[in-house]
Amino acid sequence: MDREKISDKLADIAPEQVTTARNTGGCKGCPRHSTKLHVYDWLHDFPEMQELTNMVEVQFKNTRKGYFVNSNNIELKKGDVVAVEASPGHDIGTVTLTGKLVEMQMRKSNYREDGNNGPRRVYRTVRSTDMEKYDLAKAKEEPTMIRAREIAENLGLNMKIGDVEYQGDGNKAIFYYIADERVDFRQLIKDFAAEFRVKIEMKQIGARQEAGRIGGVGPCGRELCCSSWMSSFVSVSTTAARYQDISFNPQKLAGQCGKLKCCMNYEVDVYVEANRKLPSREVVLQTRDSDYFHFKTDILSGQITYSTDKNIPVNLETISKDRAFQIIELNKKGKKPSKLVSEAEANETTKAETIQNDLLGDQSITRFDNKEDEGASRRRKPRRNRPDNRNRGRRPPKRNEE
Image 1 (cartoon, rainbow, N blue to C red):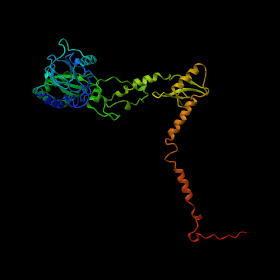
Image 2 (spheres, one colour; image 1 turned 30 degrees about the horizontal axis):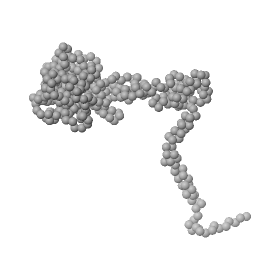
Image 3 (cartoon, helix red, strand yellow; image 1 turned 180 degrees about the vertical axis):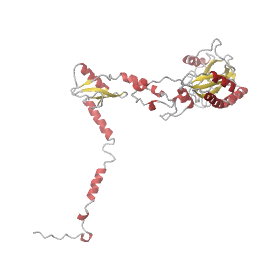
Image 4 (tube, rainbow, N blue to C red; image 1 turned 90 degrees about the vertical axis):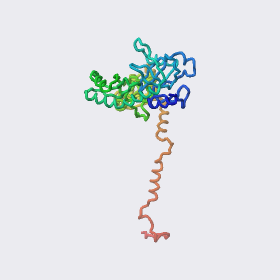
């Protein structure tokens, strides 16, 4: 089976995640790909780095990856479809990384070998018979998933089977499931083995992994991060929302998976760093008029709003963080400024309000309303004061004056 036919078969293996063997665009180290587990080979320009190791990275369906040793010294490159050692039998996957970078990825993912057998091997590049078995196995995945859900429901198990993945030779099936509590699989596995006659492996996934596999569009209007590029999920806590002054609204903080949105962690470091440069919210600013308590803070712009009442907004004044530090230093020396807002900030605030209220500078769209009303009032005269058409142009008769 030549390379062109193998490349054409890649679309049937896993079209949502397979990197094609033919470089149809992009840089040399980053061929066309549609998988979120793609790794950019930044060592592709160093031929000596491609020969230092015989380990290769192979990707299978969903987010499953494995690292295998090329003991037969087969000439492999990114995008090749290979048959690798499995337990039992063999599996079919796609080579996604070769060379020295594989060892770095293994350390990053905390790869551990299986017992005393060492790393599993790459058998060969796929043959036509291998692809035939692979196609037959993949065709059974969806019917197996539907039947597995029926069996789990009949047993009354509180779980959800999200997907089924068959091994390349069809001798093993991995059932991905979601469960909020511990599930007793003893009877379930017996029923699965009797029904499907393959080796059964149950693998639990979380709500984030399921959302990443199903996909969708987020409130930002873009594809979900978990389904487009995220390969690992970091725990998200409400502390991230507190640092960013985000409203604690469960409907807005939760994503489509029902968990806190992963994007809440993207900018939290910037907010934490900016928050360190702001004065403490417990500090009370003292002026000659009254004391001011912290009300709210715009963290990124460094603008702080203070109130004369500790609990409710009264006489709100907004100042910069530099002005706040200046007043704190004056209070430490026993001095109190006459006003909370400096004259320079007051002038800037006045200009900003003027620009905000009238962006076009006396060019409001309602500027002609009063003038039109005045002109209309001038044109509209009472009917009794209008001269009759018959007497138009004649002098009015004189009145008898006593």
